[in-house]
Amino acid sequence: AYASAYADGKPWCIYTPQLQPDPRDLILLHDFRQHGTRDMRLLYQPKLDLTSGRIREAEALIRWHHPRLGPIPPGHFIPLLERTGLVTRVTRWVIEEAIEELARCRTRDPDFGISVNIAAGDLSDDARLVDFIRDRGASGSLRGLRLEITETGVIQDHDHTQRVIAMLREAGIHCAVDDFGTGYASLSYLSKFAIEEVKLDRSFIRNMLENSRDQAIIASTIELAHTLGLKVTAEGIEDRETLQALAEMGCDTAQGYVIARPIPATELYPLMGRRHFPSLRID
Ligand code: C2E
Ligand code: MG
Ligand code: MG
Ligand code: MG
Image 1 (tube, rainbow, N blue to C red):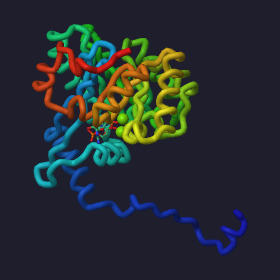
Image 2: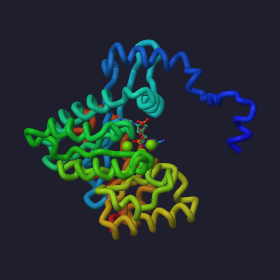
Image 3: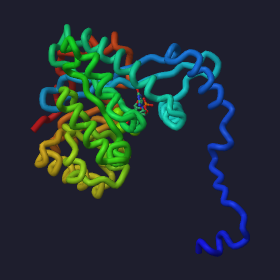
């Protein structure tokens, strides 16, 4: 095959769509280089602890309101910044913001936790992420900080990721595997990493009640995760029936519009400390 490919002596050239960049992306990249995180802010989506019925944690979710282009979804600009090697600047800002917010939340609930999403590109940058986080923890302010790494981010360059996650745990930072079920990693494989939690992707949760196959997968995933010492969060729950079913299956934590959308931190405070869904059957 090689011989015939080179037979006419012409050099190879591989074209990818990236060679034709979207002009809007060029604007975004230009403005990010110019203004950094100036037009970005964090919202927080509450996580419901299904054993106590209380909000004990939240996930920081970034928003970019571009002055001319309007709101840009993170699902678009994070991969864009990742491809261009710029994402670390965002990640550092998010971590610093989250640590500051954590201090405010912890005056209300001393055990409150905030998780931050980490891009795969943040982990490949040697152990600098770990150093950056450790530097910020000199005063013990890291307590309650957690990281979410996507399943595909964890398994790519796995030896390296395994070391980084182990260093994070030593520094007292818990890691969760985000979007679990969207890739091909098994729980037993992931349990070799020093992670504390798996987050079941919304694609499983969405049709759970109509799809007995999805429901069986979720039930056995929760069981196996617990056997392996992992906590399970379900993402993207939009109705009470699904929330109830997950509580009955022993799922530890729940997140989704039925509980709350991503909200500014000030709207988070009144939700803390009280019991939600009092009629929810919890074991
Ligand atoms: P993710 O970490 O899996 O976050 C969950 C996404 O689902 C969020 O979208 C959230 O707003 C949305 N969501 C939550 N509950 C529901 C629900 O009940 N129904 C539906 N339909 N959606 C729900 P968002 O905020 O647009 O973020 C998308 C992705 O962008 C995140 O997925 C995460 O991978 C990434 N991302 C967001 N913020 C950051 C960040 O600060 N840093 C990095 N590296 N990635 C981020
Ligand atoms: Mg996440
Ligand atoms: Mg997710
Ligand atoms: Mg996702």
